[in-house]
Image (cartoon, rainbow, N blue to C red; front, side):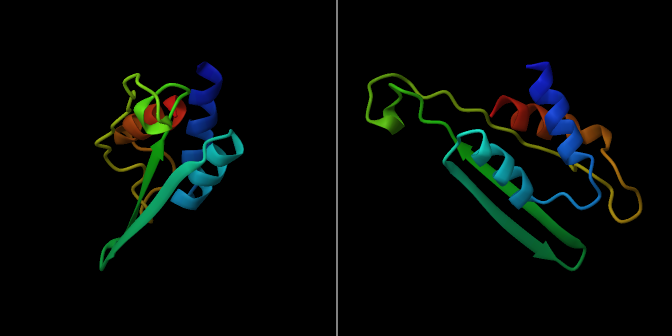
Length: 100
């Protein structure tokens, strides 16, 4: 799990990271159901990344087992453009991405 945490931190620590890059990483790891939605305002934009992992016997895979979900109410990943790099609120995003 440490490898996935470090990988997520390295990805999110970029000044130009986007939800599309995160989705590409997760899809490269075999996840198929990854959706990115971008919200824009006069102050900037925020990407929301939704990942569903159906499992082999979960209800979303037409099985009878419960589906485990990881929900994150995440704060900011960065304070761009004033500062680059991860901020302290990024721990939730790192955890959710590494878990997925």
